Image 1 (cartoon, rainbow, N blue to C red):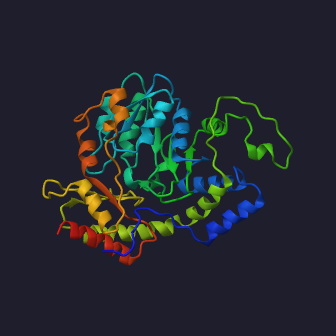
Image 2 (cartoon, helix red, strand yellow):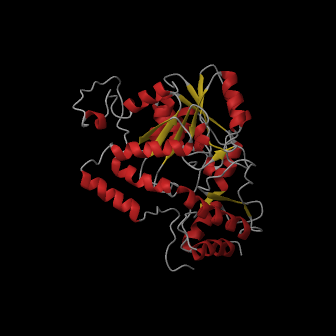
Length: 382
């Protein structure tokens, strides 16, 4: 057993991030300003998008992305049941109805045939979620979207580095939404990014992100003189701070280096965990790039008496942190009570939700850390 607890996910900051934050604090400009705009420019170049808007969470990015896609009261948005609650919650915040559909059991991503079956005259958009950093089948989703004149708002919270057929997933579709939460591949403590190629929609999103004001604070207090603002819509308080962006600038600069480290750990797990009563991640589709955000194992309850929850507790006893990504969303109390979902409605998501567990995959893991994770898992099933 390890002497110290290995956290499931912990950010790694070095001197560059720390010094950048200190410089920001000393500058006196700690909210949205030059660092945030620099981070936006760097990020949109990385993913290949025309416009980027930094916000205070991935949830904020999703909400603004849906509004930019025209989602409103009475509309429906198709969302996979295998996702975090923010994906569907933001649809509710728009006054629309999230229509939860099943996923593919092997990839955990939204199943295109389930999308087609769920479309009604009220459907406004599709929200693909690139689960754990694996790209959805965007060609099929685009074909469906074009056929029914639907917008695509990607939940790319796990997918900063993810590519589909050689291009970053954010370069596809109408809008893509990213998260920079503390356990993500790129960390700004809390934070997110909305990207898109529709200039007018992104301009409106920028205004909505700061109270619906016509001029953001950076421009209002700039060296060109004071500018009066007007509330053109009832907006939100979603803007990113320069303190957060100070972290993001350098996290983004190291993202490829960290991706390579996670890739090495991923392949070690794939090799060393063979032969155990767990289902390992499916092969990566040729031409795609996995972000290696999470390494999920599925407890094979057909061949072992160990349940998923027992596995989690046994890992904790061995000082190894784990996560669950995710329990099927339609079975959570709010979605059961509000929309009438019940057990058996979406069997693949339920099957995964009962068996899935995520194990540590951070770039700062040492060889011993990885060996400790492998040894702990082998010991549980010994």
